[in-house]
Image (cartoon, rainbow, N blue to C red; front, side, top):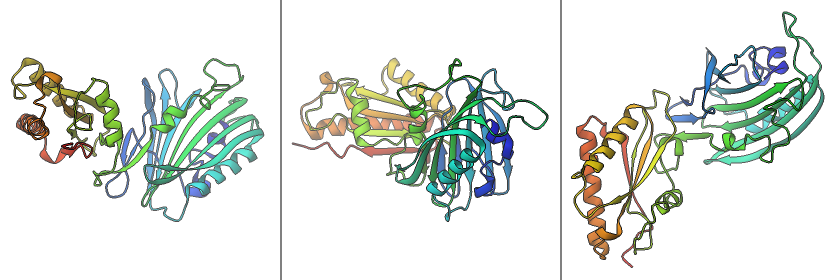
Length: 337
């Protein structure tokens, strides 16, 4: 945030949340709850602080700093705030923006369901801030745009903001006039809060796909299964939640007629999965059977996929992958009909 961030200090939300908190691309809240936020490529962490139960991170693009910026993402976690709803936070932000701006346009707050969690989204445009100079005399910029996504976890509140400010609406990089609501919807859409212990719930940040999403990925390799499904099984290498995680890798694989692990290509694939594991990148393998390998009998083909999945798991664990970080799911859509 520009003038608003400086006017109220780094604890802009402190007025009604107690203070600011934030997380890197992956941050654990209470128990096994995890927040996934993905700044655009090339952005870096410019500021991080933790005060009591509050964490606050700011990200800026290369060439910008948290004191001299045009674009910024801030991510905050406020722990133990079950009594504060996403709508309360959004309305408080809107009130502060209105008080700080010469003129304001806003949309929302909109109520959302984000992976089963309650959320709210708020868009704000500010022109001609009431406070014209920062502490120390530097001038505030004339225009600011901010998009907030607020998510209520089991015990914590997560506040994610993407902001831009500049001296002209026509400045290069200004988000005005974009069809996708300032061009930031894809960033907001990919934000997730997940419970890492509930592996039956979909969470792309953990590599846990719904059967519908797995079908979409499997369809990219033109599956030919005649059993009412596009794949047999999924195997996911889960991230280490004590470390920042990279974006998930999803790989649909057509199994050959021969047992898995006999070819150089298959062994190279195992090495690629090990690389993802060591980089803390969740990886999901979607197993189907190639047309030439099909026996045409459900039990035979299903057993083939099961044996190959077992071999793949054995190769991974023999190379140091922790068994508890491998999660397997059978496609519920497959049948013998």
